[in-house]
Length: 412
Length: 151
Image (cartoon, rainbow over all chains, first blue to last red; front, side, top):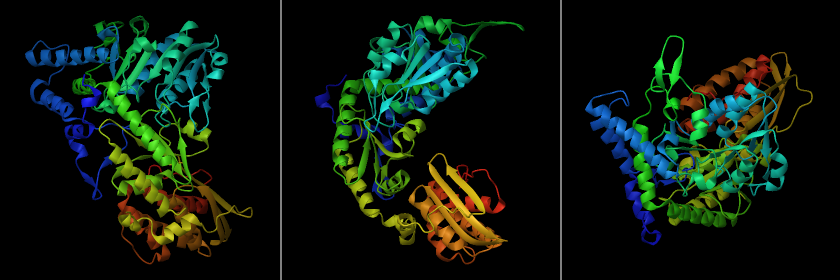
């Protein structure tokens, strides 16, 4: 890992070919990293190398290319285990992304362990991906969903209610690590410890945390942890589900097909153990290979350094935006992840984003897949700037100037 | 800084967005329609009073972006006193204009929306009120959406 003091963050931009371009005649400022991150050349080259030299199907082949593809695929699994401090590679299931990881747990673990009258505990700040799969499960099983409340615009969890919410009926507590619409960093280790004492399983949605801060699933003490490759400099279409071995081994298959079986007869099938039990069909092979390169890239920089840089940008942007007249800021003032969500009085978020785009600044406007949270806050949408390590303070300065100009454009 | 945007946010649009006309409910309405774009959160209620085929009064309420509000406001100005057929013809012209930029026939003040076609993501904002008007004229009770509008 690199020493933080020696990192020239602006120079890292050279590793990301896409950042060097103009949009509408202005230098691109990419502040939509919470939606997806850009990819360094190392990742693009890993994909190219795979398709130019090693492409073959995995696991079943005897020939040289298949051996290479299989060992690269399995090496990525081991790398992912190391990335989040899993006990072994067998605890890593490749998925299409965070959403599929949660759906897998809800379908497989949920169907086996939930009965009518049981309770699924979530928080009010969950992304639709950590909400809808549980609603589907609740409909199938007759379980109920309860929520840890969020405190207004400041957007932190009201933990004074937690003890009364952690009832005997609760079977799983699924929570977001960093909120994608508020920037809130939840105390997941504490929450998981409190659930664990009561025998409640826990899932942590790491979509916004895995590539931004050091993650140790054993220190967090959760049972499942999920994240997406594309938000951490990897390709789209690949994600990771980590689960404790004993839980994964006891779970029924999610999908059936090739790759996940030991033997098949016309009337019955024996399944492989985890993680292969959960990877039916020819998997995304280039995805894990690209993700492997992304994880190497991030850990070479050091995720504690990335986290420090992200937080610095977010706090800097928050302070500067707060000085603008009639702005409403969402999420905590202190200890926020690398994003800022805001609204200008009487200006719709989509108008803000359209104007910012003309100035070369890529923002996101909308409900950020957290509609219930938006309704709770009494808004339809917010504008969001989300940062990564290749963003700079100079870009934040320019962005704040653009927001001021937008304020002027629509009048005071 | 936003010179390019004059195509989209023309002065007339900004004016109607800040001070929408006919922006109120209408208890005496004979027709009513709702427009909703779940992805944007845009909500619109359109009220019509019809005398035979002629629109004698029209108003709207709702929340949305500048383009959707101004579009609804200008639609109400256009439609008052017009017949069902007039509105249908204009719907076709506005739809063509905001999706392709081609202006066919006289669209009057509505020409300010010609620039929308350069901003594909915003076409659905400009057309929502028009879909609601068509639904109201047909007597459709179901809320309309332009979420699937192809551009």
